[in-house]
Amino acid sequence: MALLFVPLCPDVMLGQTPEKLFQTEEVNLEKALLYPEKIIRLDLGNQNIKLDNVDFSKFVNLEYLSLANDRLKELPLGLSSLKKLKILDLSGNDFENLPEDFGNLTSLEELYLNRERKFKLENNDTILSRLASLRSLHLENDKLKKLPAEIMLLQNLRYLYLNNNQFKEFPIEVQGLQQLQYLDLKDNYLDSKDILHLNFGFQINL
Image (cartoon, rainbow, N blue to C red; front, side, top):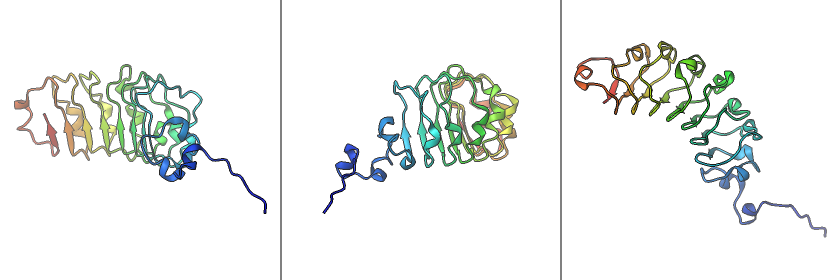
């Protein structure tokens, strides 16, 4: 009787199926690229890795991705084609603008843009407004002093995090966010006495 030998990666040989192996945050990029279609969550944050030659479009079932603190000057190839991506953490990077096709992330619900060094919100609001499913936006510790009027384009936004910025006056632009339920303004330079008595129809954290 003939024997068929099938080469397996070491983790599979240890009894771990790709489904069990690649549905956790602990998977490194090298392992993830073996079975990209099996990846649901991928944490590549705080790693000194090069993503220039990585095509993220292969991760067709990815729902969570962290690229936080990777010093990226531009977003990786294929990132905007991730149709199932729900949560994306791009905090602490060096890019200035989001790509024009960023709005193709039609399932994206939560976006982290904290601690950005060069990112200009006023140059990217139109692109952000194309994210039809975006519900939560994190702009913490971005040295923001005011919001651009275009923030009102984010009509489906429900949670906005502006804590640890440099606001001295209440950002009245948020009044145009019809679906907003929660606004975090903690650790700014605001006088809570001038704000708490106002009724905006959403919860404010000061």
